[in-house]
Length: 354
Image (cartoon, rainbow, N blue to C red):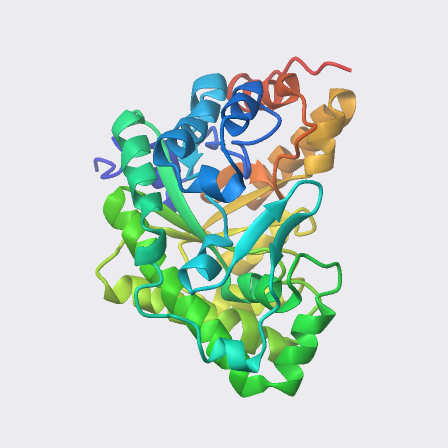
Protein backbone atom coordinates (compact mmCIF):
# COMPACT_ATOMS: atom_id res chain seq x y z
CA UNK A 1 0.00 0.00 0.00
CA UNK A 2 1.31 3.46 -0.86
CA UNK A 3 2.34 5.70 2.01
CA UNK A 4 -0.08 8.68 1.98
CA UNK A 5 2.54 10.89 3.68
CA UNK A 6 5.64 10.00 1.65
CA UNK A 7 5.62 13.24 -0.36
CA UNK A 8 5.36 15.41 2.75
CA UNK A 9 8.27 16.94 4.70
CA UNK A 10 9.99 14.49 7.05
CA UNK A 11 8.92 16.31 10.21
CA UNK A 12 5.27 16.10 9.16
CA UNK A 13 5.66 12.43 8.27
CA UNK A 14 6.89 11.71 11.79
CA UNK A 15 4.17 13.80 13.40
CA UNK A 16 1.59 11.78 11.48
CA UNK A 17 2.93 8.56 12.96
CA UNK A 18 5.65 7.40 10.56
CA UNK A 19 8.98 6.03 11.83
CA UNK A 20 11.88 7.10 9.60
CA UNK A 21 15.24 5.37 9.42
CA UNK A 22 16.99 8.73 9.82
CA UNK A 23 15.12 10.99 12.25
CA UNK A 24 14.54 14.57 11.11
CA UNK A 25 16.28 17.27 13.11
CA UNK A 26 15.71 20.83 14.20
CA UNK A 27 16.81 22.59 17.38
CA UNK A 28 14.98 24.83 19.79
CA UNK A 29 16.44 28.37 19.61
CA UNK A 30 18.26 27.42 16.41
CA UNK A 31 17.83 31.02 15.26
CA UNK A 32 19.80 33.08 17.73
CA UNK A 33 22.95 34.68 19.01
CA UNK A 34 25.31 31.81 18.18
CA UNK A 35 24.94 32.79 14.51
CA UNK A 36 26.90 35.83 13.24
CA UNK A 37 24.23 36.50 10.62
CA UNK A 38 21.64 36.70 13.40
CA UNK A 39 23.76 39.14 15.41
CA UNK A 40 24.11 41.33 12.34
CA UNK A 41 20.34 41.61 11.87
CA UNK A 42 19.77 42.03 15.61
CA UNK A 43 22.18 44.97 15.70
CA UNK A 44 20.02 46.80 13.17
CA UNK A 45 16.93 46.80 15.42
CA UNK A 46 15.87 49.21 18.16
CA UNK A 47 15.16 46.46 20.67
CA UNK A 48 14.11 42.85 20.95
CA UNK A 49 10.35 43.51 20.89
CA UNK A 50 10.77 45.73 17.84
CA UNK A 51 12.79 42.90 16.27
CA UNK A 52 9.93 40.42 16.79
CA UNK A 53 7.39 42.86 15.34
CA UNK A 54 9.42 43.57 12.18
CA UNK A 55 8.33 40.79 9.79
CA UNK A 56 11.09 41.22 7.22
CA UNK A 57 13.85 40.88 9.82
CA UNK A 58 12.09 38.18 11.87
CA UNK A 59 11.54 36.13 8.71
CA UNK A 60 15.17 36.52 7.75
CA UNK A 61 16.48 35.11 11.03
CA UNK A 62 13.87 32.34 10.98
CA UNK A 63 15.35 31.17 7.67
CA UNK A 64 19.03 31.52 8.64
CA UNK A 65 19.38 28.07 10.30
CA UNK A 66 17.80 26.46 7.24
CA UNK A 67 20.37 28.07 4.95
CA UNK A 68 23.35 27.35 7.19
CA UNK A 69 22.47 23.92 8.58
CA UNK A 70 19.77 22.53 6.28
CA UNK A 71 17.55 21.82 9.30
CA UNK A 72 14.39 19.85 8.58
CA UNK A 73 12.19 22.54 10.13
CA UNK A 74 12.18 26.28 10.67
CA UNK A 75 10.61 27.60 13.84
CA UNK A 76 9.09 31.05 13.81
CA UNK A 77 11.29 33.73 15.35
CA UNK A 78 9.18 35.43 18.00
CA UNK A 79 8.85 35.23 21.80
CA UNK A 80 6.42 33.67 24.27
CA UNK A 81 5.98 37.06 25.97
CA UNK A 82 4.24 38.74 23.05
CA UNK A 83 0.90 37.49 24.40
CA UNK A 84 1.05 39.76 27.50
CA UNK A 85 1.49 42.69 25.09
CA UNK A 86 -1.67 41.63 23.28
CA UNK A 87 -3.42 41.48 26.66
CA UNK A 88 -2.49 45.09 27.35
CA UNK A 89 0.63 44.69 29.50
CA UNK A 90 4.00 46.34 28.97
CA UNK A 91 6.95 44.05 28.23
CA UNK A 92 10.54 45.10 27.73
CA UNK A 93 13.82 43.24 27.41
CA UNK A 94 16.89 44.50 29.24
CA UNK A 95 20.34 43.40 28.09
CA UNK A 96 21.89 40.99 30.56
CA UNK A 97 18.63 40.69 32.51
CA UNK A 98 15.99 39.41 30.09
CA UNK A 99 12.27 40.19 30.04
CA UNK A 100 10.86 42.69 32.52
CA UNK A 101 7.15 43.23 33.16
CA UNK A 102 5.22 45.13 35.79
CA UNK A 103 3.98 42.33 38.11
CA UNK A 104 0.24 41.86 37.74
CA UNK A 105 -2.16 41.53 40.67
CA UNK A 106 -5.81 40.60 41.12
CA UNK A 107 -7.08 44.00 39.97
CA UNK A 108 -4.85 43.93 36.91
CA UNK A 109 -6.11 40.53 35.83
CA UNK A 110 -9.68 41.83 35.68
CA UNK A 111 -8.54 44.55 33.26
CA UNK A 112 -6.81 42.31 30.72
CA UNK A 113 -7.98 42.92 27.16
CA UNK A 114 -8.74 39.37 26.04
CA UNK A 115 -10.92 40.29 23.06
CA UNK A 116 -8.66 41.01 20.13
CA UNK A 117 -5.45 40.22 22.05
CA UNK A 118 -4.05 38.10 19.22
CA UNK A 119 -5.00 40.75 16.66
CA UNK A 120 -2.80 43.27 18.47
CA UNK A 121 0.27 41.16 17.75
CA UNK A 122 -0.83 40.09 14.27
CA UNK A 123 2.31 41.40 12.54
CA UNK A 124 3.72 37.99 13.49
CA UNK A 125 1.41 36.45 10.88
CA UNK A 126 3.20 38.40 8.17
CA UNK A 127 6.45 36.86 9.37
CA UNK A 128 4.90 33.41 8.99
CA UNK A 129 3.70 34.25 5.48
CA UNK A 130 7.12 35.55 4.46
CA UNK A 131 8.91 32.46 5.76
CA UNK A 132 6.45 30.05 4.17
CA UNK A 133 6.81 31.78 0.81
CA UNK A 134 10.60 31.37 0.89
CA UNK A 135 10.84 27.98 2.60
CA UNK A 136 11.35 24.87 0.48
CA UNK A 137 8.39 22.51 0.31
CA UNK A 138 10.69 19.86 1.85
CA UNK A 139 10.95 21.89 5.06
CA UNK A 140 8.36 22.29 7.80
CA UNK A 141 7.40 25.60 9.37
CA UNK A 142 6.66 25.48 13.10
CA UNK A 143 4.64 28.15 14.90
CA UNK A 144 4.46 28.35 18.68
CA UNK A 145 3.31 29.99 21.88
CA UNK A 146 4.18 29.70 25.54
CA UNK A 147 2.18 27.54 27.89
CA UNK A 148 -0.34 29.50 29.94
CA UNK A 149 1.41 28.76 33.23
CA UNK A 150 4.84 29.72 31.90
CA UNK A 151 3.58 33.05 30.55
CA UNK A 152 1.68 33.63 33.80
CA UNK A 153 4.84 33.21 35.87
CA UNK A 154 6.47 36.13 34.05
CA UNK A 155 3.35 38.25 34.40
CA UNK A 156 3.13 37.57 38.14
CA UNK A 157 6.83 37.69 38.98
CA UNK A 158 7.80 40.50 36.63
CA UNK A 159 10.77 38.53 35.29
CA UNK A 160 12.20 35.03 35.21
CA UNK A 161 13.03 33.73 38.68
CA UNK A 162 14.51 30.38 39.81
CA UNK A 163 11.76 29.27 42.23
CA UNK A 164 8.60 30.91 40.84
CA UNK A 165 7.54 31.31 44.47
CA UNK A 166 5.50 34.47 43.88
CA UNK A 167 3.52 32.76 41.12
CA UNK A 168 2.96 29.61 43.17
CA UNK A 169 1.84 31.61 46.21
CA UNK A 170 -0.58 33.55 44.03
CA UNK A 171 -2.02 30.28 42.70
CA UNK A 172 -2.66 29.05 46.24
CA UNK A 173 -3.87 32.34 47.76
CA UNK A 174 -5.94 33.66 44.82
CA UNK A 175 -7.22 30.56 42.99
CA UNK A 176 -10.07 32.31 41.17
CA UNK A 177 -7.87 35.15 39.95
CA UNK A 178 -5.23 32.61 38.92
CA UNK A 179 -7.80 30.69 36.88
CA UNK A 180 -8.89 33.96 35.25
CA UNK A 181 -5.29 34.78 34.33
CA UNK A 182 -4.63 31.33 32.89
CA UNK A 183 -7.89 31.43 30.92
CA UNK A 184 -7.02 34.84 29.49
CA UNK A 185 -3.61 33.61 28.40
CA UNK A 186 -4.97 30.31 27.04
CA UNK A 187 -7.74 31.96 25.01
CA UNK A 188 -5.51 34.65 23.52
CA UNK A 189 -2.71 32.12 22.87
CA UNK A 190 -5.12 29.78 21.08
CA UNK A 191 -6.29 32.63 18.85
CA UNK A 192 -2.65 33.49 18.20
CA UNK A 193 -1.89 29.89 17.19
CA UNK A 194 -4.92 29.86 14.89
CA UNK A 195 -3.59 32.99 13.20
CA UNK A 196 -0.17 31.40 12.72
CA UNK A 197 -1.68 28.25 11.22
CA UNK A 198 -3.85 30.25 8.83
CA UNK A 199 -0.75 32.21 7.78
CA UNK A 200 1.14 29.02 6.89
CA UNK A 201 2.48 27.31 10.02
CA UNK A 202 2.30 23.54 9.46
CA UNK A 203 2.98 22.55 13.08
CA UNK A 204 2.25 24.32 16.36
CA UNK A 205 4.25 23.92 19.55
CA UNK A 206 3.29 24.84 23.12
CA UNK A 207 6.32 25.60 25.30
CA UNK A 208 5.52 24.93 28.96
CA UNK A 209 9.05 25.76 30.03
CA UNK A 210 8.35 26.01 33.77
CA UNK A 211 6.39 22.79 34.28
CA UNK A 212 8.69 21.47 36.98
CA UNK A 213 8.35 21.32 40.73
CA UNK A 214 4.57 21.02 41.13
CA UNK A 215 2.42 18.73 43.24
CA UNK A 216 0.03 16.80 41.02
CA UNK A 217 -3.15 18.78 41.89
CA UNK A 218 -1.39 22.04 41.07
CA UNK A 219 -0.03 20.61 37.81
CA UNK A 220 -3.59 19.69 36.85
CA UNK A 221 -4.80 23.25 37.51
CA UNK A 222 -1.89 25.25 36.18
CA UNK A 223 -0.67 23.20 33.23
CA UNK A 224 -3.13 20.56 32.05
CA UNK A 225 -6.43 22.46 32.18
CA UNK A 226 -5.27 25.64 30.39
CA UNK A 227 -3.40 23.58 27.80
CA UNK A 228 -6.53 21.55 27.12
CA UNK A 229 -8.51 24.77 26.75
CA UNK A 230 -5.94 26.12 24.32
CA UNK A 231 -5.99 23.03 22.12
CA UNK A 232 -9.78 22.71 22.19
CA UNK A 233 -10.08 26.32 21.01
CA UNK A 234 -7.54 25.77 18.22
CA UNK A 235 -9.38 22.68 17.01
CA UNK A 236 -12.77 24.38 17.28
CA UNK A 237 -11.46 26.99 14.83
CA UNK A 238 -10.93 24.24 12.26
CA UNK A 239 -7.14 24.01 12.62
CA UNK A 240 -5.97 20.42 12.13
CA UNK A 241 -2.17 20.79 11.99
CA UNK A 242 -0.12 18.64 14.41
CA UNK A 243 0.62 20.06 17.85
CA UNK A 244 3.77 19.39 19.89
CA UNK A 245 3.57 19.73 23.67
CA UNK A 246 6.64 20.43 25.80
CA UNK A 247 6.03 20.07 29.55
CA UNK A 248 9.69 20.65 30.37
CA UNK A 249 11.08 18.86 33.44
CA UNK A 250 7.59 17.85 34.62
CA UNK A 251 8.86 14.61 36.13
CA UNK A 252 6.17 12.03 36.83
CA UNK A 253 3.54 14.66 36.05
CA UNK A 254 4.49 14.02 32.42
CA UNK A 255 2.31 10.90 32.58
CA UNK A 256 -0.81 12.94 33.31
CA UNK A 257 0.12 15.38 30.55
CA UNK A 258 0.56 12.60 27.98
CA UNK A 259 -2.66 10.86 29.00
CA UNK A 260 -4.91 13.93 28.99
CA UNK A 261 -3.48 16.58 26.64
CA UNK A 262 -4.26 15.78 23.01
CA UNK A 263 -1.03 16.56 21.21
CA UNK A 264 0.42 14.59 18.31
CA UNK A 265 3.91 14.74 19.80
CA UNK A 266 5.47 15.30 23.22
CA UNK A 267 8.98 16.74 23.53
CA UNK A 268 11.26 15.23 26.14
CA UNK A 269 13.50 17.46 28.21
CA UNK A 270 17.06 16.50 29.02
CA UNK A 271 15.91 14.80 32.22
CA UNK A 272 13.43 12.43 30.51
CA UNK A 273 14.85 9.24 28.93
CA UNK A 274 13.38 8.63 25.49
CA UNK A 275 12.63 5.01 26.38
CA UNK A 276 10.49 6.19 29.30
CA UNK A 277 8.75 8.75 27.10
CA UNK A 278 7.99 6.05 24.54
CA UNK A 279 6.44 3.89 27.25
CA UNK A 280 4.07 6.74 28.05
CA UNK A 281 3.26 7.62 24.45
CA UNK A 282 2.83 4.18 22.92
CA UNK A 283 4.29 3.22 19.55
CA UNK A 284 2.31 5.47 17.20
CA UNK A 285 2.52 8.90 18.82
CA UNK A 286 5.59 10.98 18.01
CA UNK A 287 8.22 12.08 20.49
CA UNK A 288 10.99 14.65 20.25
CA UNK A 289 14.26 15.22 22.07
CA UNK A 290 16.54 15.32 23.91
CA UNK A 291 20.28 16.05 23.54
CA UNK A 292 21.75 17.92 26.51
CA UNK A 293 22.39 21.55 25.45
CA UNK A 294 25.51 21.57 27.63
CA UNK A 295 27.03 18.75 25.58
CA UNK A 296 26.36 20.82 22.45
CA UNK A 297 28.30 23.66 24.06
CA UNK A 298 31.22 21.46 25.08
CA UNK A 299 31.62 19.67 21.76
CA UNK A 300 34.29 17.09 20.95
CA UNK A 301 34.17 13.61 22.44
CA UNK A 302 31.62 14.72 25.04
CA UNK A 303 29.18 15.76 22.34
CA UNK A 304 29.81 12.67 20.22
CA UNK A 305 29.13 10.40 23.18
CA UNK A 306 25.96 12.34 24.07
CA UNK A 307 24.61 12.12 20.50
CA UNK A 308 25.33 8.40 20.39
CA UNK A 309 23.50 7.93 23.69
CA UNK A 310 20.41 9.82 22.50
CA UNK A 311 20.33 7.94 19.20
CA UNK A 312 20.69 4.60 20.98
CA UNK A 313 17.96 5.53 23.43
CA UNK A 314 15.71 6.56 20.54
CA UNK A 315 16.46 3.38 18.59
CA UNK A 316 15.61 1.17 21.56
CA UNK A 317 12.45 3.16 22.17
CA UNK A 318 11.30 2.86 18.55
CA UNK A 319 8.34 4.66 17.02
CA UNK A 320 8.08 8.06 15.31
CA UNK A 321 10.89 10.33 16.51
CA UNK A 322 12.34 13.81 15.89
CA UNK A 323 15.87 14.62 17.05
CA UNK A 324 16.17 17.84 19.04
CA UNK A 325 17.68 19.23 22.21
CA UNK A 326 16.29 18.89 25.70
CA UNK A 327 16.13 22.70 25.80
CA UNK A 328 17.48 25.46 23.55
CA UNK A 329 20.71 26.36 21.75
CA UNK A 330 22.70 28.76 23.93
CA UNK A 331 24.52 31.83 22.57
CA UNK A 332 28.00 30.33 23.10
CA UNK A 333 27.41 27.17 21.04
CA UNK A 334 29.98 26.70 18.27
CA UNK A 335 28.66 26.42 14.74
CA UNK A 336 30.91 23.43 14.03
CA UNK A 337 29.28 21.53 16.89
CA UNK A 338 25.84 21.90 15.32
CA UNK A 339 27.21 20.78 11.95
CA UNK A 340 28.79 17.73 13.61
CA UNK A 341 25.49 16.65 15.15
CA UNK A 342 23.62 16.99 11.86
CA UNK A 343 26.30 15.09 9.95
CA UNK A 344 26.27 12.36 12.60
CA UNK A 345 22.53 11.88 12.18
CA UNK A 346 22.52 11.90 8.40
CA UNK A 347 25.79 10.12 7.53
CA UNK A 348 26.65 8.21 10.69
CA UNK A 349 29.79 10.27 11.27
CA UNK A 350 30.34 13.77 12.64
CA UNK A 351 33.48 15.91 12.61
CA UNK A 352 33.67 16.54 16.35
CA UNK A 353 36.31 19.17 17.09
CA UNK A 354 37.88 19.28 20.56
